[in-house]
Length: 461
Ligand code: HEM
Image 1: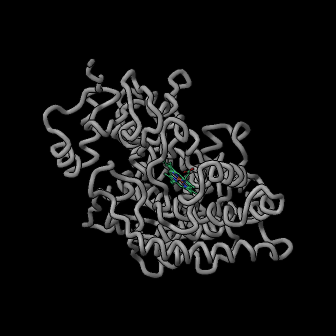
Image 2 (image 1 turned 180 degrees about the vertical axis):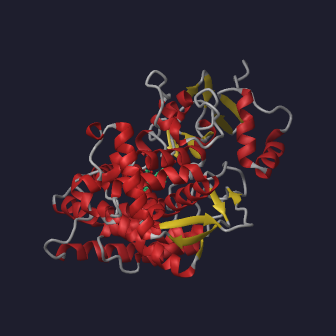
Image 3 (image 1 turned 90 degrees about the vertical axis):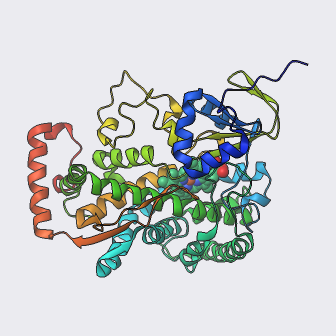
């Protein structure tokens, strides 16, 4: 019998040896695996992908050749899509996906900054915040208001209680990923009931009240395109998928701005110049290019979902190696986004790489993939980007956010990638200086860039 061809990988260590090395420092272990090539054998059950082309192959063929092994709700969560069959979920997500990107929701996006500032005012009263929980509360509110409108009932509080649930985030090793299933099940059920109540309530919303995702879902239900349960599970899935990921990304972003004061100044100058003291809206995004580049560079260096996992469902080949059903494949955005083949000085925080990127050197599609890819790509990628840009601009223009002196956050990889233990100190910026600096920055921009070629700033409109 011809032996089955297997990709190269660490020799002699075996599953236990690799498992120990991985558990000591998962990110360093995965980065080190690149020396074996684009497809690496961890053991007979698990291969690791190290190139954008192979990542694309795996993610694009999810739902057919490969399956998602772990859904965002945990497989026992009530009201979640684990209990739905794939076709129903895909139908529901396509309806929600269209809704999440619809211009009719611009008004909802325009409320994001006000919510961020409302939270920051309470942080400011305290002077210091524990970044992860504070940003999780903010993110839960942002997504709840977006999906359900201004009345969010007990939803943000219930989402906060989902904390013990586990997102995908480590290799599929025995004993990994504890899921507190019973608790998750109970909170998931309460959350689904509250979401269901609020979706029904949206049917009687007052004239003039801004649209929310729930309205689009209600319309889809009326047209027979979706069941009420389907609508509930979409909103619950969004709430679950959104709050920890967005919070972790914002926490990394504020930590990076603290470490790179010159970038922080650029972000602040941009907000002063373009917003003229007002709150940013989705329409301001094209003028907040530096802030958007900071968001992108943060997601490149620290993608909250740092490891995606698939199970082989149908016999197939990857990079010429055969794969059989039951085997697993891991794709790490963290590793792919630090590949020196695609990024100059890949470990450095350099937002300008997204602004001055030569058109002649396009990135391979999956070299930047913080939101995944293929049919199961993140449903909230657009919303998350808007929410992060708007929050960053609104907060940096009003507050100084600095890491508490003497504290060093730890690299949390237990679930999602986050700066564990990060605390931030908050002080208000002087509003008079804020206005003066905005005027000076606008003058400088006009002198250097030529006002005619730029979209008009708030002050000029
Ligand atoms: C910075 C913030 C975010 C990041 C980095 C992120 C990243 C991701 C990634 C990588 C996936 C794919 C997982 C896989 O392939 O296994 C995913 C799925 C998903 N995301 Fe996000 N996400 C973010 C925010 C959001 C937001 C704000 C929403 C909702 C508005 C959302 C909703 C979802 C949903 C529903 C899925 C599951 C899609 C499916 O399985 O069909 N995410 N996210």
